[in-house]
Length: 320
Length: 261
Image 1 (spheres, each protein chain N blue to C red):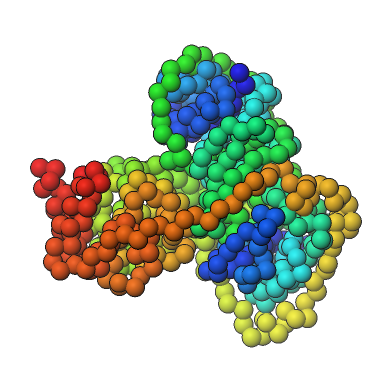
Image 2: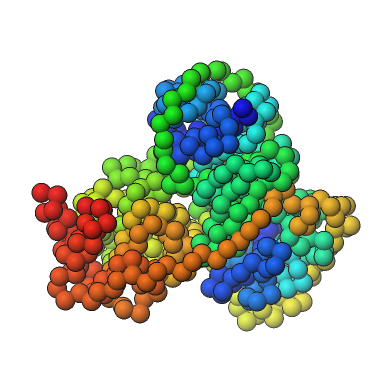
């Protein structure tokens, strides 16, 4: 059976959920061979094996943390040359897409980014993508070289599928470009204790109607009652009420959770682009004419300062 | 010596218009007004700021696109860029990111550059990988997704705000940079700028000028194929309730019925 390379996104050995989803998709095409780089790479093996990785290729070197993107491209290329895979799958993070794209140029392959589904096909893997602010769905494939495909979080279920997960050291020699861009300082983002926005099953977002940074506490309280991530519209971020890392929309994150709750968000195309594919959509807005209501499964026309705290309290009392 | 700044820009269908695919499954550019991709305005703005800080700098905007793509170049020129290069060729229709990046890389090399500045992504294709591909093709450092950027003493430095960390980056010139929408509001063209732009030079190049074979680009030369494109079915109309004092409770009831609580 053909092997499929899966690039592993991990934090010091803790595998992030989108990578486990990739293993589910990889198994539709062939046998997953994982590539884990950097500090803690070997520690990823048990989780990867449990979800279907037959092999885990690992490499660690200071270059992975000290220089931007290119050392990881060198390593992924080394894995590609060692394995000759049927496809290369990479999580659709900002960095993942850049790594995938540079690899694709080097190996003379086409690239598809931000797939939301992947199936085996007669002429290679068929990727589903959302286009034009998720108003269209396309099916595409790579027609030259080895398909390089990046896949968005929440595109597949995580499935247990125990496999050998044999750890093998990957030998990597860094090219001249690897040390081109130095990371001179790194400030880790402070953890909020809430789920990662793009990976969360539930997202609670606030917009212009929240009307102030201090008022985001009521959005956070609702999110915490549901174990949800917190999002914000561009208007709220541009006003400085919430960090850009939480922005949902075209120039922020695009999310596809089971449940999306929009509070005080009108639903401009910019925002819709980032949340339109959510399974269930709920909105609370004062303006009955707000375009967000065209998308909702359930909407409340009302003041979020009345509705959201009442909802939070009701959820808490139901949970006992 | 003058600092040579090249800004790569894209002419895209207006994101607020009713965007569609054409019969050949390429982006339909006929039925929706086109314009300079909003995210590229941030790249032009940063180029202008870098040029203002430098003793001597020249900004060239480059685009690959049909005749109308000149509008995007004019916008950038009216903001303050000095000159433009327009790569236009019928054989380019339907190029994917690999074809477009090949053409851009050759056009940028021909123009000459110390720093290439791009937006974070186009607003139509939204891949966000072109700057990384350009760096790979040009064989220079990639300093991408910056929310702050500075060019001085032959170096580019900037801040990249990632998912898990904020990184301070540094690379020697020449380099390829991309900037996010957090890098600073783009200026509006002044009346004087608009008038001046009409007199600024726009050089037209075709594939033969760049020594690129037609079969390396265009729909046929693409390394990816779109097999189908379907409009997402409109979401079925949901229940909309006016809050009469019990809105939060009603919403909780709905969430419970959907097993979210």
